[in-house]
Amino acid sequence: MSFLEQFPDRATLLESYQSEDSRVPLKVNNHIHTPYSFSAFSSIEEAVRMADEEDVKILGINDFYVTDGHEEFIDQCFKFHIFPLLNFELIGISREDQESGIRVNDPGNPGRTYITGKGLAFPSILQGEQLQKLDRVLKESNKQVAKMIDLLNRWLEFQRVDITLSVKEIMEEHAMDSLRERHVAKALRIKIDEKSQSDDEFYKLLAQSYGGKSSEKQNTVQIPSTPKTGTTPPAVSKVEPKKTIAAVKRKPEQKPKRSTLDVKSAPPGAGFYLNGEYKGRTPLKVPLPYGKYEVRLQHEKYYGWEAQVNLDKPGEIPLHVRLIPED
Image (tube, rainbow, N blue to C red; front, top):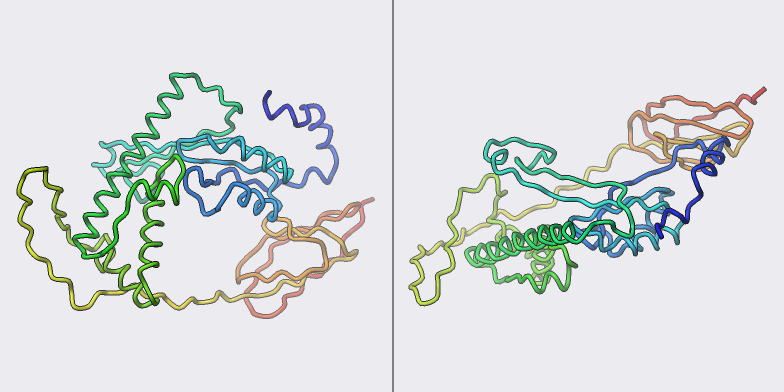
């Protein structure tokens, strides 16, 4: 049975749309990653719960190469009364575009293309051959990241950083079936943090691990290849570490200039929307950075009110509106 059968049919949904309250646009986020690929969330439950706290009504899972989290995602969405949108994402590389410097839909990586499928069926309708092809893509992607880990280990040895990463450890502690570059970066950062006794030590070791410069400005360094068994390792000139390493320094955060919008309406209890996002009912105060905002007030049996406000000075900015009753 499709999970969609648990929702109202088309006629019922159209009928419910006739009321004024139902015409308020729903908040939608149709593209989040979960721990099944890589995610800032510790679990699917956390992702869906936080979406509910932000009043999101339609939420889309969008993991790389896998649909393994779809069933759990549906269950959590039902728990929080959120409509689950099922998606997944692939990454393709065109060597020709890469060599020509052509950027498709990844500004930082020529030749790389992100392809995402939206509104997938559940249970999956992929056939055996299609599933096998997808499995090969996942294995090939994991293999590429494993090569990256090997290269990174040789780079760390070259930089005299006493840290070694392993595919097994990263898969067990940070990844599930899909091994991503971000898992590697996360594992390295954690290991650097574990070896550091202070912030200064952390930044020095971080800079040493990355060569003390951003990768764009570094001269190309030839990392010695791993010698084959039974052969003499190639001679490598001794590289003395620099006496001073340009440590990464935290820039002092500059707090944005802010105002507080003091929103009141007559009558009170109007719904207040900021750039289309529901913020609550009047009266209320909304702290905001300087800037221009689209605001809207909506109250049952009263005409809606819309305007653009420009916040450019500190303190409370009054927004007091008398709504006009409908005839």
